[in-house]
Amino acid sequence: MFNPDTDFLFPSRVILKLKGLRGPDWDALVERADAVSPTDPDHLSFILMMVQLNGCENCNADSFKAMRGCTACSVQSIERFSGQDEALLKRFEKASGQIHKHLKSIRLLD
Image (cartoon, rainbow, N blue to C red; front, side):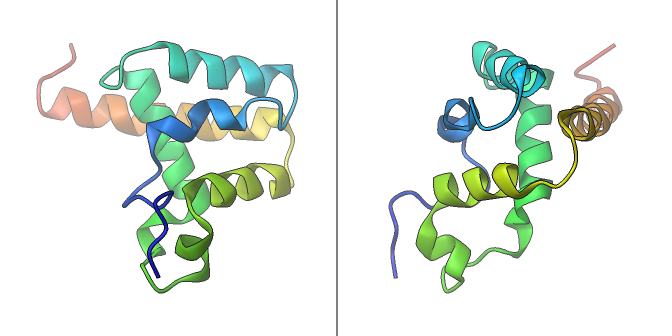
């Protein structure tokens, strides 16, 4: 089954749809990730964090998640996250570390 809202990995177009699902710290992170260019490390870090939270690497065309679409999957992941916003921010910082490490390894960052 084809769903036009289903992408290979978490799509940037869904970022702003996650605003208002948690507290003010989460909303600030969502706005920060959306405000920068798609190649900015903060944007990439948010994408990586969501890929990890959503389990995008295990999604396929026949899965229930794919049939629902990326927006519904992402909203559900954030709403059902059992930790506090601080735990989500820590996940973002961890993803940011991974992105920065990779960018340094390919010499795109100092």
